[in-house]
Image (cartoon, rainbow, N blue to C red; front, side):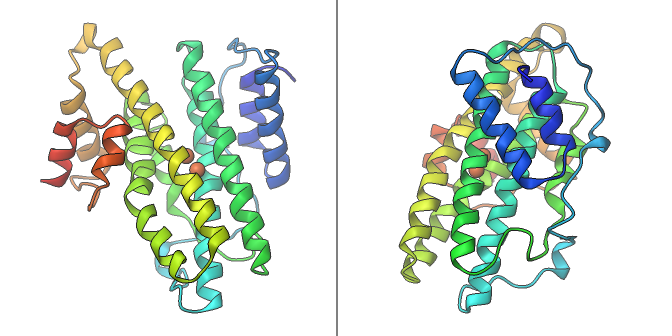
Length: 268
Ligand SMILES: [Fe+2]
Ligand SMILES: [Fe+2]
């Protein structure tokens, strides 16, 4: 295998966790060696064909155990939830790469990098989870994370507005607080992992901002899309007239490509 879309298809359609990680690392290595092809030869399958592992069991949020950090079980649940977020992030990166074709090669290179980095994040948290006596899949996980991907499978602008610029941007807002909480637990290894993730995630959001603005421009000839108005429209549509909740990490969001206008509207 040496085509990025074949790697994406394999990562989306095979269920084994380790196989997915191995393939992601292999694709990244081939890319680093200049041997990965980006020709879109194969057609994409619908998002309903994406497969998830048997474990973790996916539950609606109301059935999930509380993740209060005061008990060992709470700490396990906390890291398990983070592992699941990173695991779904690997899917989200491969899915945007796989589903939306005929874009500049740089688009595919950017999302391959995101898939690779989220796989690294997953591995870091999974190793930490194992030191706490459990593995990824031993606890149930939040079912909702994939729904926004399904909702936006037909619309790249919507996908970029909702996944990197809402879901991943949320990580920039809440991770500094999480780091402070686990620092209090004297979990130095955990602090280091979360700091590394926070730094990388700012780049992932920035990649989302870059392609969101690029797409607004590319479509402007036809429809006159103004980025701030378009972002607002996408949020109101896919959040069903709600907005992402603050408080927002203004400093990191500005570095990640949000404009002052967008942030002012979010905070309104
Ligand atoms: Fe990540
Ligand atoms: Fe990410």
